[in-house]
Length: 393
Image (tube, rainbow, N blue to C red; front, side, top):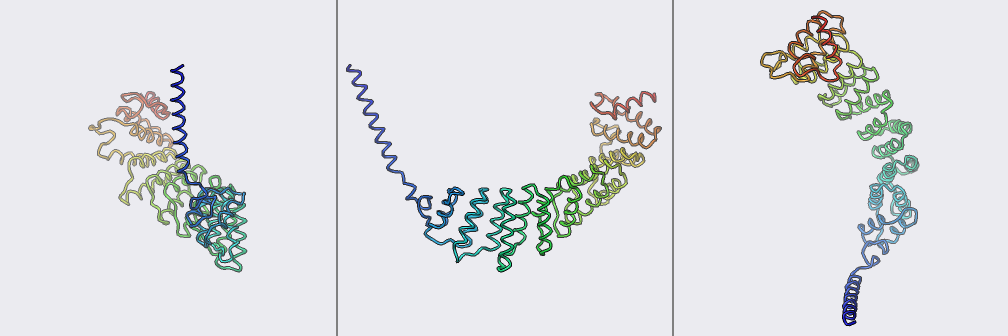
């Protein structure tokens, strides 16, 4: 019993101490209603108002109460800042409530900045219908107030909203109206429009023409992908034209862009432009490198232009470590690929005799399937070349 009573006494003391510590913690807490800028109390500065609007719930009237209960009168810049804050949070409803509350202040008038911020908030959420509605209101307001006239930023937000909402047709409508009103498009507008043209090559090329005419240009990776699309569609003329125009627009024809053009020409079996590209690169003094030459060989193989393929092959052999030279430290897979492509070009060009000669030569050098180490897996060209070599023997 004595031991049990001692335990009870110690437990009571511990509970009492814990209760005192808990009470002290509670006493040191500051009620939310007493903190500056909290939702419960009026905001006394812009930081507090931002916090209050950020914590307010949309559709409950809390946004309006947070603004109207502030101890200071927000100006136009303050409302724009609040709308942009809502846009970053992807809450277009709250942005609209801020805008509507702004109308209750006679000294604060909407302008193209506040309208653009509101439309951008709708755009960030893909709410293209709400963006259009606000833009229509903006146009109506601009008839009596020039400060509400939309600019490039406004159209950019509206067009982006339509694109994000999956309505390229509406984006094109506003793009045309923008042109009619004399507002110039910028890179952001063209990027948004082009991103929605993945299934419409014609429309994409038209936008690219407009973009270049306006003095804008895109990134090399974009052009490389568009060149690839031209090749898959069998439109090598458009690919060549695009390749020339992108350079005039100020974009560098990088290696990736050149390879994309060669791939498009290969898909269409057009060797002449590919050879012209190699000549242009040689004259410019910056290439072509080995990978680009092999890509041109693919074009020649597809088109059956064996004589041009042989010329490219000779240039490949002229590099410091030639394919067939005695000092060759080893044959790489790309060496074998180039050899196979030359043979394929001869076969496609109905020059069977030359193909047989090359097969024998390349096989002895270990460039085809018979070389040391065996043939490359999955190489149909190597298999055909090896069989032709056997038959020739």
